[in-house]
Structures are given as structure tokens and as C-alpha cells.
Image 1 (cartoon, rainbow, N blue to C red):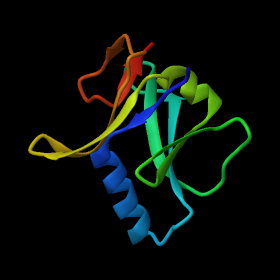
Image 2: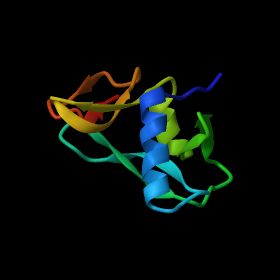
Image 3: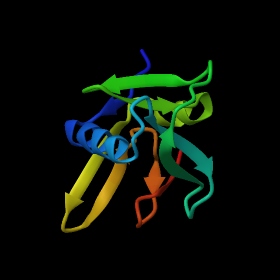
Image 4: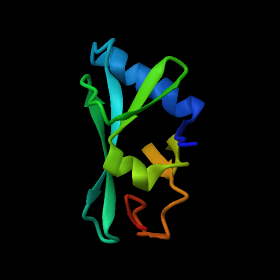
Length: 109
């Protein structure tokens, strides 16, 4: 079964940001794109249009949408949010990544 999880903290931050942007029907789109120092990198941004081939994951009343190409690289992953001393932002625990770069935003499959 295909799966992508959203941590409670990530869901709360998505909800907060969508409220600030006044996008009640919006969601976070997560993409994998070629590039970065390890071969692929993550892109995230708000959107309000869903394509027929998108995978939709919902947690605590927020949606994360992933296109088919990207989901092939993210299946089984977890979206987290960190606001600690080591930086603030979203991150993905990706079980499909064989290696990642030091900055954590690029990976190899």
C-alpha cells in the first residue's frame, strides 16, 4: 500500500501557514526534482489545484499532495517540521534515499 505520513508538528505548521496565506482550500505540494549535489532535491510550496495522477495524503485537516513521479521517490516517507536550534523548516525522512548531502535537501536513490 502506498503511504506518506505527515507528523503532527508538520500538519500544525502547514495549517498555520495556510491560514496566514488565506488559502482555506490550499495544500502543501511536495515535489522531487532533478538537481542538487546528490541527484535529486525536494521542492515544497502551496497550491490549490490537484491533477488526476496526484497522490493526496491528509492528516489533522491538512493535505499534502505529491505528483506521480515524485511519489515514486517518496513512498513510505514522513514529512516533519523542526523549529529547533539546528534550524527551522520542513524535512522529509525518506526511506528510498540511499544517500543525502550534508545540507539535507538533496538525495540519491
